[in-house]
Length: 250
Image 1 (cartoon, rainbow, N blue to C red):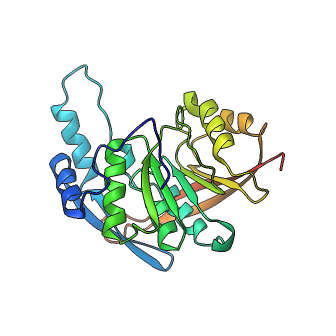
Image 2: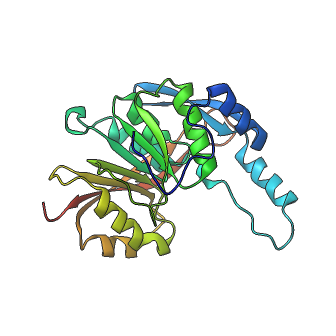
């Protein structure tokens, strides 16, 4: 098991599924939602009504006090696309995957279901709690683990042939430390790769200007249709960008 000496989990790694669900229920209104991507279906713990929960936070937060929004709890369209992407990769060439800023762990969970060994990481305690619940709920303990990682500071003892990140480029102040983290944790191999996904409307131009000094970068824009057939809303269309970063000097 990979360890991060700088931080520890806010819950016992040996806690049972029921114990962890009880912790989550004490903090949020939660329920499981079945999500199907490719040939696999997984039960993913969600805040039951995220919009209503955010409205509630606003009503109980004191005036002048910052409101901490649970963006980690949202399943972003880009994480769905990354989940499709990893299912097309040859397992024989990838012995481990690291997902950064994983939130509830959707992409890493589907990668684990597909047979990869995955480290699902985030710097938010509740995100890791939800991810661990999702690992146990879907019987993926042999394939996946959670790890607290702040990629602006932390250093791990391991390198990975594949590093994934969905919507982790929203804060420009993290760009340089993120690139340093990627350099220090991508495997020394010509086939090693970083795959980042973001919404088309987010520029992140500065990140890729910095990253191109260290990596060869290819980009593809993909249309994505979010199915809301079970609700009164019509299906929503999104444009997402998938970036593949490969080391230049190998």
